[in-house]
Amino acid sequence: MKITATIITFNEEQNIQAACESVSWADELIVVDSNSTDRTREIAARCGARVINRDWPGFSAQKQFATDQAATEWVLSLDADERVSDKLKESIQRLRDKPASSLVDGYLVARRAFYQGRWIRGGGWYPDRQLRLFRKSMGQWAPRHIHESVKMADGSRTEDIEGDILHYTTNNAAHHHRMIGERYAPLAARQMFEEGRRTSAMKIATAGPAAFLRGYLLKGGFRDGLAGFTIASFAAHHAFLKHLLLWEMQNKGR
Image (cartoon, rainbow, N blue to C red; front, side):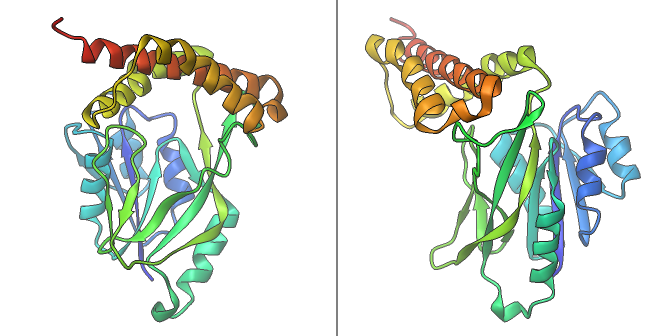
């Protein structure tokens, strides 16, 4: 079982070295960069990555391009602000020692987020399992603007794998707020619009409070103290803003 680790980047000089080092055991490392203006490509190359510079086509398309460049059948996809934990590395090594006939086609990995100085347990942020290790002949990145994921071919088999991807999230509250306003909410609204979903004044008014209650109470965000309250509050802001942006899209030109 030979594995190519792939990472997509843009101005990630603060993260890329740690991300690359966490997958230094992979048979191949590919970093696809979208015209960074910092030292991202230089640092990645120094870590042994094959670096490809490519204009930004969107998350799914860039990750699919990185997957297509892999010289191996197995691909492990990582974001620049993520790391492979020691436990996950051990689990993958056990897979590599097994005969190929005993392997399934993809493995779901839990993702643990570090936020406001602590590892988050609630709010729907953990285990947040994602299919990150897969046979590229059996999986493709679904074409979505946001919350991109691998769609496996019909008849494929997947299993959970022990260990976490460690996600070092936003730098601070201002960064989190900016990411919602500049990336997450606009992309989510665009995705909803293209899927034919529409909103209303009532949905705009209730989306935020509903998201807060869901994350903080129903999904146990309260267990994470102030960090859990902050996450739920930002989830409410995101829900409100994406519905407001969707309303603007559907009423454009009136």
